[in-house]
Image (cartoon, rainbow, N blue to C red; front, side, top):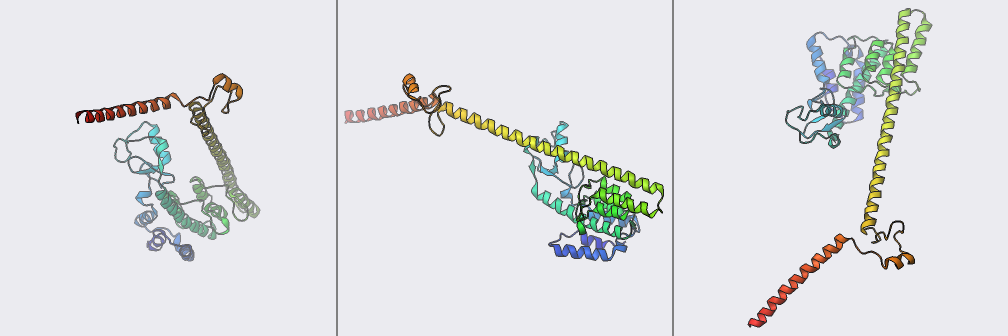
Length: 344
């Protein structure tokens, strides 16, 4: 099978939106050949190789497209979650070179923004191709000539399964509208978001329920097909509950982290103020007279303490040492001058 049209559309990096739209339009015009079966295994391997991400965008541990890349002390880039798991297992050697790592602190991992941007571009590029294929499957009434091999290959290569197309539809919206449950489940198992809504305000659950009503109204589908759709809708609802729970947990963790950070900042500021007030290094240059008296001495305080306390002992000792050193220098110079006049 000639894979040059697909490779030409996937491999180059698009420079502007017009080129991307032109590529998608060209692909839509040849939808019949776009999902045609592969003639042999070599053609399938060539297709999978054409959509595979570059090596520099693959995590050495998971062998998958990077999503949250971080730099390690060995100079290599890894997926954050996989590297944290690596360290939590007590491993202090590089996953690539097997050399001892200078630093295994999770807090010091640095985000690799350059690799993250490249990975997002590759993911979005494959997502646009996936969206176009799903639109073709919908136009053909759920039929896919290659059995969904291209869709599965794109998803496994890291395509963005939540990219939006015409009408705000995601690939999962389009596959549900096509009536293809098997491919919809494949996207669902690869983190397709079921809570996203299209321009009509319908999420994936509402779209599936609408399809079920159409099937029931035709009265030509078997009870087994209806049961499959009911089971699929229940799976969508379960995934929706998991997504909401995950979102709530993430929000709680973010709120807790922010509260802990603010509390640490308050504690540090309070400790700094207490240290400055005790040492007499605050902006007023005054230390505390006594506990509970405050910075500005009253007449009663001056009566019992006679004056405002001076600088801390460490400052006074430093000034005394400087004075003693200056006195010694003056004595030596005076002795030299005295001997000079005495001998002359």
